[in-house]
Image (cartoon, rainbow, N blue to C red; front, top):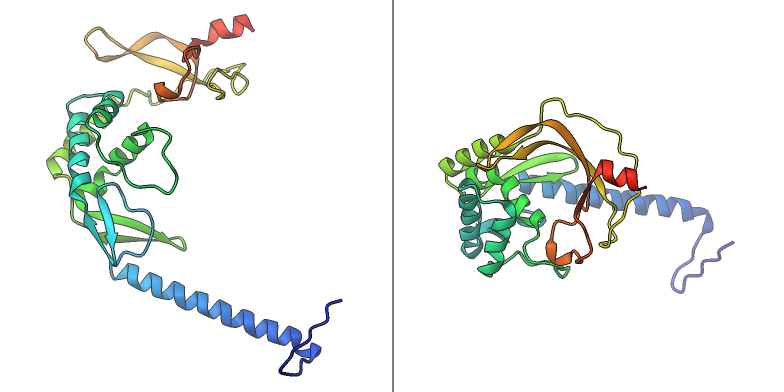
Length: 241
């Protein structure tokens, strides 16, 4: 049992539930009014909140280009369309001391591959100039100034589709040790089936016989200890076990 004492007014316990209900109604009304205000601003093309994509910064209700970042967005796409691998793009960015977007969490490494992939995955937004914000399940497009030209975007899309090496029907194999192997990185190894290989000319060609492998998912060599083998043949690993 809880006793409520008020210093300035009389409290009738019989009205406690009624007062709580009225207070809850008011809170719900405030939330609904705030939600309507946010959606109205988004429909009007005004930025609200959220992390801005690399190359942009939110100032008030507008999203402006950060030119010191935009030059590296263009350079990343230029390198990609020149056939430079993601690993080498990362090395170029680190060597050039390219700035990264600020974060409240200290970065463990410079220019993680996921950061570069996030930029590449946003190619359409960079080329056509918009940012998508989601609110209560609804999507809104906020117009921003484009960073990429359309020709670069189309070249990128063409190259990315050509770089996909997965067959239309992926071959499935049973991996006995999947989810059970760990390496010196203290990460659980994953399994994959390699259906293609790179030829001496640097082209991806289909293997006559697909090869199963277990591999360490750590993508950054500076975080991988010397005794991490990176990958091992599935047949060899299963035979040893």
